[in-house]
Image (cartoon, rainbow over all chains, first blue to last red; front, side, top):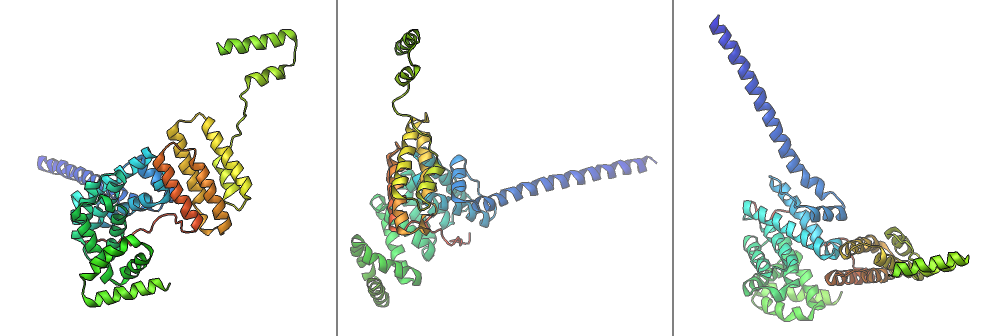
Length: 229
Length: 148
């Protein structure tokens, strides 16, 4: 009888333990769901709401790579938007520092994320931290030297801050330009820039001279097409 | 001291039984500033209104901001919001309306006390005028640059 009583108490405890574990599991899942879902809702907002939200408080990266990419995209959208650029100094400062915090958080967890290093470079440029800008641009290029879309946005950023880049960061930008000239999508844009921007010509000429003859011919073709509209 | 002076004028006017309108004119600011909202500005400028009407409203808006009692930081934020509201849909406007909007944007910028903000607004105005304005620069395809 005593044995039976002890068994009943044990079963009751087991049930309570099971219940507590289930509740704990549900709470953790709920928290994870909220953390993962937040970036998706945040990035769906219009640019003013998104930017004001990023100005007001730091954004937290989710746990998955997809959620991480969504929040990085949100920062890029806000920082590159017209509204983000015309904000007054205190708000603009908050935006760049919150995005810098986010990018640092992502690269701390995932140091091989070349996109996160790019976002860090973008935020550093907005903050006027040119040492960090150079360092982050270089790291991004080293991690993803052949990603055309990333090379394109890195080049835009480098070009806008060329005078502030360290020699190593300029060398990384030269490698990006060489990669873009050798690519299908980047070539047309580089050809158009050659026509549009006289300051760029000497620089890209030196880079193209180092490339294989076939790439040089393709570059001349792209410039010719750009010149004839 | 000034207050005592005004009270004295009022008292004298009342004693003499004169017209109080004259007294009110003495104590009222020379220029009454009309309340102009951001919506008024957008309505007058970004919806195809005439250039002069737009300029008048924008100037009244700037004048109102200056006497609104807001701090410089608050005014600068309102300036950013007003410019954004003006340019938001400008890409779809005909060139003549874009020119009116660009001019309005430049006038709104004069209310700001932040030189960097003014420079950024002027850049935006230029892109609006030449038709190259876009709400936001293109964002990457979002593909992960590296698997890890």
